[in-house]
Image 1 (cartoon, chains in turn red, green):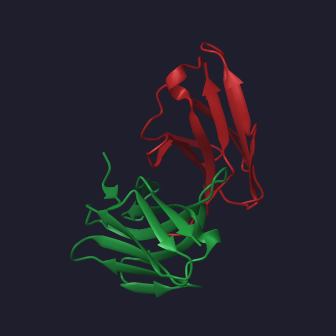
Image 2 (cartoon, each protein chain N blue to C red; image 1 turned 30 degrees about the vertical axis):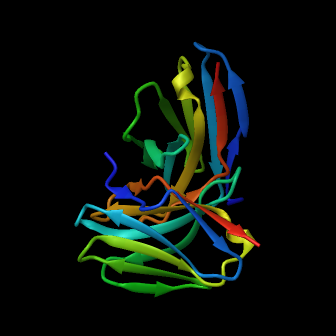
Image 3 (cartoon, each protein chain N blue to C red; image 1 turned 60 degrees about the horizontal axis):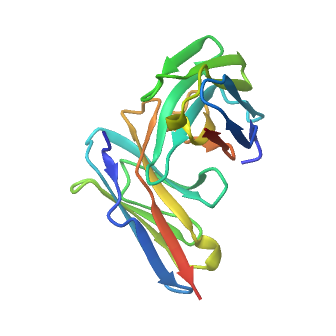
Length: 114
Length: 112
């Protein structure tokens, strides 16, 4: 969905490096999410944010941190990358106030940790 | 752990045939379900959703059926086209909560 953008689209890094993945959205949604996708598995939630002052851990938050710089921006950081963090990372957004949580996804960032 | 799963990891169909992709869930508190399509190199794209107070919903060439008795969800694609080749995920929302719980996905391959 072009309304949700992620940078970079691909990144190769080394073990121990700090990495930041960025997400921006023009949908005007308050809720933003970071997911990780591994081959053969569904998407797993890392962190989510319901507004700029609200950050929450998801299912697999260890080794990750996030920053919600503005309503439209939500960044994911790997403080010290390790090889098992090699995966496809997706940002998503959804609308506040809806009881039904339709989420809109960005194109993904493919991260390889050597 | 996974409470949303798919019966078949891969499905091959001929162009023009109908496709049926199945999904089982285990949480009776699930109140909203979404089917996503993910093409290679892209993020998941919304196809169709259904709320737990419904048992059927139709879109353009797609139909979702929900059987709450056996906790089963299916996606039917009519007249499957090569552009339908992708991985399809079902996702559930529990108690109108914040997160979607995704299944592992089914790969649909449409052959000419």
